[in-house]
Image (cartoon, rainbow, N blue to C red; front, side, top):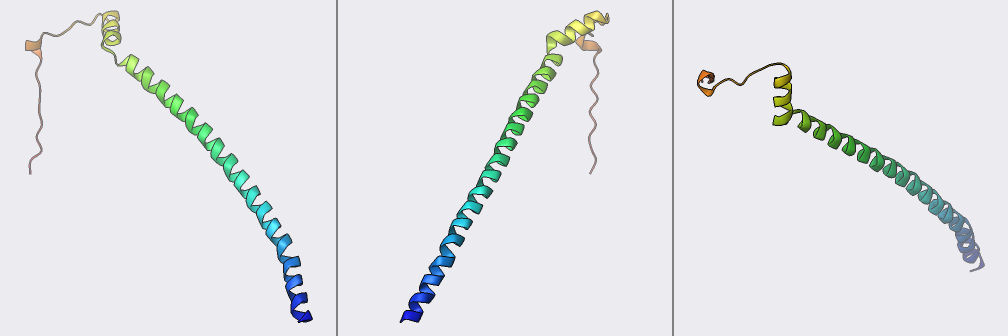
Length: 93
């Protein structure tokens, strides 16, 4: 009986520090992954904001008022609707 108590005590003496080492290792991994996720979220926010600015800038260039302003600067005139020809191309099967 004394032998089984010694084995049990030895088992706990060895496993408890291993358990705490595992907890510390897991906490360290969690912190590193959490920091990586935070950096990625910050990068994503920067990309989203840059994308929004580019879309807004593109919309201002494509606005009718901007196009009309550029056309006037280049002395372009509107073509009457009766002078416009539309060509449709159909794919044959």
